Image 1: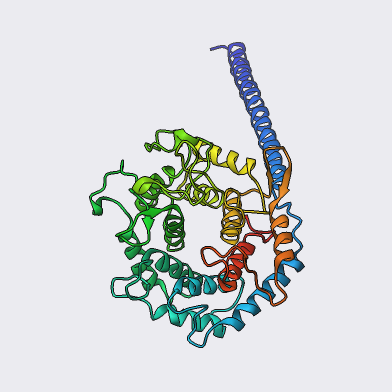
Image 2: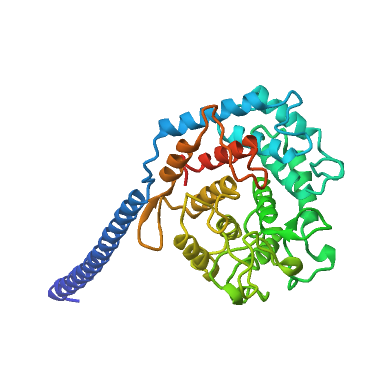
Length: 404
């Protein structure tokens, strides 16, 4: 090759190399621009998410000082009314003691506090070899064991009650109405829990049952939880593939009633056409348990229940029952709305309610000078200030502004 040919060849190689490099740089520039654009979009989305997160932060106007004063007076009341044997009201009704212990612990009272320690000792004395926690010849084994599990779980920070909770959990699962009673999933009693094996299951007992299983560590996909969901779905006045009973077609308002089993029953009575009336305490219990079981907020059952409570939102009464079961209702109301993760609840008229602040205001107005609450409508033990005060303390736990 001549000298000039060598120069030409070198020039050609240099030109091609330069062109190649320019192509690479152009490509990288385009990629960089795309990467930069993607990063910018990501930052924008992130900032919007952060804004939404900020917008969804607790907006309740609950006065922490008022909340704490209500609690302190109520705690002091329960500490003064405890019997020397560690019980409240009666040793024959251990559910009340379990609720009081749970309420005190969830209100910040130490496990070493004498009232808590004595209450726990009494409950420990009720532990049976089968794992249940109940009085001899009890007809309320599910209720008594469920509440005791919640008390022990609240006191179990150091694991001292883990073994007992595990045995009680197994006992409760054995009480659930299912294949062990030769029931099929289509049976109206299937999945529920009630006042012992010999009696029908109901939504209230099933709600306590699920609270206990959740306190013991059960997740939404737990088989016992999913079985319970079948029963709970049949307690709703809503025609769906989840409810094969004759009751929802007669009302179909999305609310809940006491039980579809053994012919069905509603504590609010029947409609003229034989339907089972929906009422608030069971509707909030049903809504809460569905959320526990992992049912989506977009599910028709949850939507219908939410619409029912929007329509009948009230803190003046237990809608459907008036003053009956009012404080049980307050507790279930607070737990359900907290589980939904809402601070401002919009009723059917479009009015938004700071439900936590509204509930605290009602409870501040109705607290007795001695720190207790009591219901003049004495049904389901609500004429007893011990159980009512425990319900209130449990409700106030969900009124904390930081709670979600």
